[in-house]
Structures are given as structure tokens and as C-alpha cells.
Amino acid sequence: MVAKSKGQAKAEKRVFYNDEECPIRNVVAQIGDKWSVLILFALVDGPDRFNSLKSRVVGISQRMLTQTLRDLEREGYVDRTVYPEVPVRVEYELTAMGKDLVKPLYQLVSWAETHHDDIKRSREAYDGRS
Amino acid sequence: MVAKSKGQAKAEKRVFYNDEECPIRNVVAQIGDKWSVLILFALVDGPDRFNSLKSRVVGISQRMLTQTLRDLEREGYVDRTVYPEVPVRVEYELTAMGKDLVKPLYQLVSWAETHHDDIKRSREAYDGRS
DNA sequence: CGGAATCCGCCGCGATACTG
DNA sequence: CAGTATCGCGGCGGATTCCG
Image 1 (cartoon, rainbow over the protein chains, first blue to last red):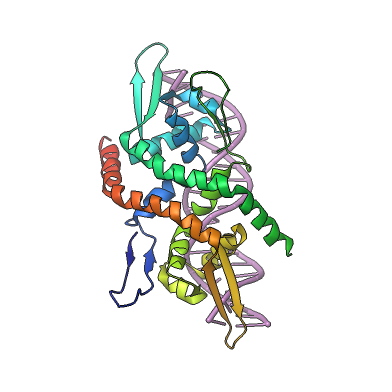
Image 2 (cartoon, rainbow over the protein chains, first blue to last red):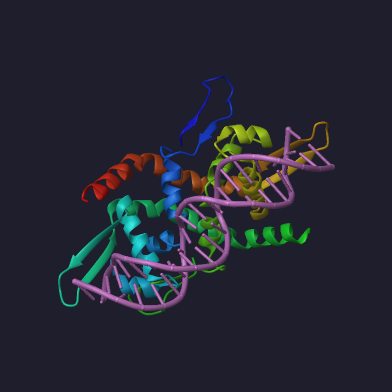
């Protein structure tokens, strides 16, 4: 995670960088946006077409669907295949790396579901004490 | 993950929402910002003070450190303790929930480190084909 | 020391209109 | 059907200044 230890004895506290060489930032910055995770999980159910995704990922605009899919493709998480029929059919599916990314992501999702109520209560408590 | 299946036979494709009731968004939206993950991992090494964190999380401004710590505190991931000495000492540390969150997060970090080069190559390939 | 307040540029994201 | 192009707002986040 681009953290440097001082090589000192006794577990010196690490230093953290937030640059383009930081692996965690490279991943979190991509999936941390508004739609990436939902699209990735939608594609877990199998390959899907543009407009089908658009209706399954509720509330997303064409613009953001296109853009997010392009980004995910560029990262290597999603494959795009054009079938030159009439009308055109375009299918998106997870790559091997995409399927692999979903595993640790699913751990996080499970955690989120388990602690959703705790977080809501914590927020209310925080906001409540004026 | 706030996904509704149609209750149909044969693994109908799920629908995904991005609203305030979506647990994954509640977590990813917080974690996905520019500094949260780095701060959380910095606190894994043990409780730490404001200015120490500021120097360990390289490049962060006071404003963002304060704001991110407040957010993490509100979510219930971080505890803030003020020691009324002179000068004042303030320590931040992970709560039980914060420590728990770091576990799935660490899975993601490991994944990110493992695939960092694959991602960089994928980007270059994508950008290369004009 | 550990902040809070203010100002401001950038850009993520949505809405809308047009295209092959 | 699956996009691209353009416009515009809101908010994230950096720089700076002031405070108990």
C-alpha cells in the first residue's frame, strides 16, 4: 500500500502516500465513484446489454453508464463486445480480473449490509449531540 | 445490497438501486473519498494525534484531515479523545467497528497490490489503441 | 496544538439534444 | 440500440488566514 516503515525496531508507525503509484488509491478511486460497484455487481449475473444495464441500475443516466463502462473497460474489469447485427447489439461482461475483484468487493458489501444499521445509529447519535 | 430479484425461476437478473438505503453505497461513498482509507490504515498502527497523522498521511491538508476524521467519527469508525493538558492533546483511534471494517478493506488492499501492474498494463493497452 | 472560517477552482455528475 | 456532444450546477478539496 505504498507505506514505508522506518526499518526501526518495535513496529514504527507507517507513512502513507496518496499518489499515482499507490495501488489502493488506484482501485478505490475507480470503484469509489457513484456507479462502478453497482455496475460490477450487475454484471455478476452474467453478460448484459447497454439498455438492459441502464434499466437494472436504477437512476443512472446514459452518460454515466457509458463513461463508467469505459473506465471499467480501461481498468481491465469489463469486456465490451459489439455484435454487428441490425440493430446493433453490444454486450458487457466481467473479465477474469473483474470477476476476481468482485470477491474482495463482496466481502465489503457483506460487511456493509451487516453494519448498515449500526452506521445509521452512529450518525444519528453524532448529529443528535448538537 | 438493495437488489431485488423478481422471485422468478432460474436466477433472474437483479436490479440495483443507488439511494440512501443502499448499504454498499453508504460505505463505499465514505471510504471512496480521497483520504479515508489512508487514515483508517494509519490508525491500524495504534492511536495517533492530529499533527502526527498529518505528517504520516503525506500531502493531506489540515482541512481535509479534520473533515475526514469528523466523517469517520460520525460513521462510527473512529473515536476522538481530548486530553485537557497544555498544550491540548487530541488522540484518534479506531473503534471496534472501525477495526472490523479494516478487515474486508485489507482484502481489497491486498487485491489492489497484487493486480496493480495488471491494471497499469490494461490502461496502457486501452490508451494505446488510440 | 488542533482546529474553524472563508474563498475559490476544478470536475463529477445529471439533463437535454442529437447521431449512425 | 447504443451511443456522442454540450451545458451547467453542486460539491470536493486545496490554500490561506485566524482562534482558544
